[in-house]
Image (cartoon, rainbow, N blue to C red; front, side, top):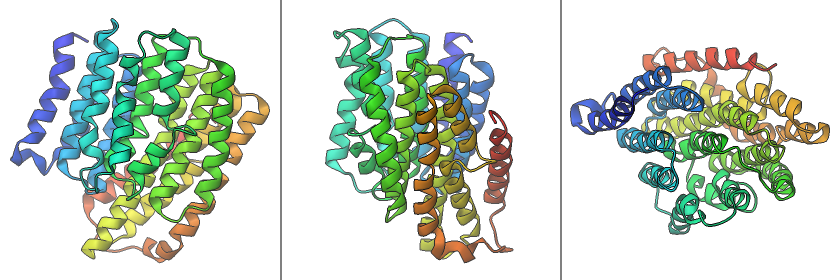
Length: 366
């Protein structure tokens, strides 16, 4: 794909979203533009754009602010630029800039948490500030914090504490794939022992805390921590491509969980029908837990095939944490699954597409 069109589409889409007449359809516009980019690009970035095409649909479902789509498209434009200009340090600087552009979308509908914001700013400049270190240690230093692995997971908890908002959910799903895809181009050597035990600790702690979670934000944060552990285990084994695919498959479950929880919150506040949001939320819980016929199941099978036997089994057993915690939190909304003739047609179509996508990907690696 030529450089100029590659930059014009995402930045042009962001500009179009910014104008008032387009804001009503911002997530549809962003989704179509992302899908077009997925067809026009090659390599790992094609799958990243496809992931965000679906994510923007869920942003419409979650009734997020149109400016969340605006900032996300600007951020993705910077990500694409970092792929096009592969020379250091420009590529690392553009990647850091893309993470900073995502910042307004995270706290747009939440109270700004200064500790979380300050840590996030440090994480964003990590790829640039560590350029003088040996490659293997430089990548390990910013990989574990950016993925949200233990003990660097607290920034994930910080941005999700008021609920899994659209912007925050994008950061702990799609931008993980961006980081891993970026690393794939460098094929680095990494300190295996350090990443291995950080990964094991993250999986165990994330699964335990997800099982006893008291709200959707906490459940999402610790499910993301367990997922980060699985990504580190795959990376430590040198399976960066598998880690990249795992991040996309498992991230779909977190996206559905976040959009469903956020949509349920808005529906309750507006006294509107909640059954579609509750259905998406349940689908997200099942996918995060890795139940069959979901993308999470395919992700777990992938981990089982790529990791040592006990590590793969640990990743599969970790799914019990989100399913226990998720069903406990979901219990008060179980009756909301009944049909309602006043459902919004757009949300119903997105939910139907989600179910079809989950079924297709549920068979992808199984």
